[in-house]
Length: 359
Image 1 (cartoon, rainbow, N blue to C red):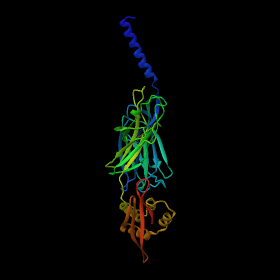
Image 2: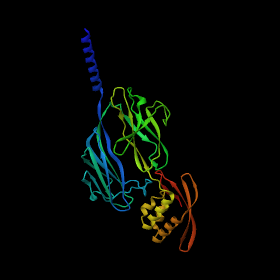
Image 3: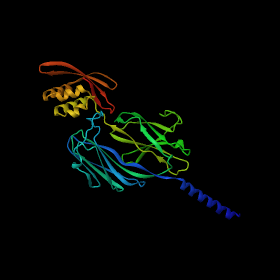
Image 4: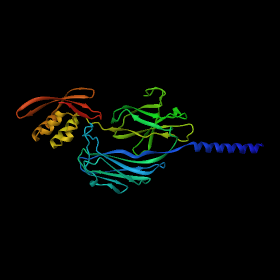
């Protein structure tokens, strides 16, 4: 074999090798959120239209589906004891109304519809309901992913569901990678995305060595601990990515979400509760207490005068002690010529909101 023939032979082998490598990369389809989930709440000022622009990446394709969940936790209902649904709303996409007031009532839990998307899109949401009403909207699609059935993430989780604005908090994110001999462990990284499914930051490496929040070395569960101190309410989306020896592109996980919300002080909670009582909104008022039969019975049997008296008591309450996430207040109850001193306690619930737990 002369020199020229040898070079051609080596070139042919190289091309065939690249083709075989490319053919070995299996393509699979997975579901992905194009938008959201995003929560919309009713306004005390009446119906307000909120618009949100979003784009879809070139790797995302249909069919696309908009899913709406009617009900959930709000500032007046975050203890998980009930569902605050809306009875009227309008949902529009790119100028076309998808759902209107007739599609909503207290018995409607979810709505779904296949939709068409452009490269650039706009969602319009108008919630016309009581101030405690809430809906969650998400749009899902499909994306083509390079990798075999074992070149993927099993799950991704965050140890905190809710963060507070202007409060430095360390968050640990864990993700399990399926067992695959071609995984490059040092390539597993934590990424931050916005609510339009756009990557906005690389938060660093994830570890499976018993450090950085990782519990057990070598179990294919990777962890990373990152600190946040957001200055305004926002939804933070996390994805994990990993590279493999035989893949040209990294594999990413589904998204995990953390909500950063503006904290409500215990004093503001008392004022909001007083407003609920004077307006006769017992449902909202009950959600500012830890669930109890005593509280439910009392507030539902109080007449207007008694509710106004209780509201005045809350507005005049003063702090007598505090420890960590517990506050104790004292005020004077006066009704029918009988006056007595009342003491009650507030604590944070699992959503970080202040609720009355004893009175």
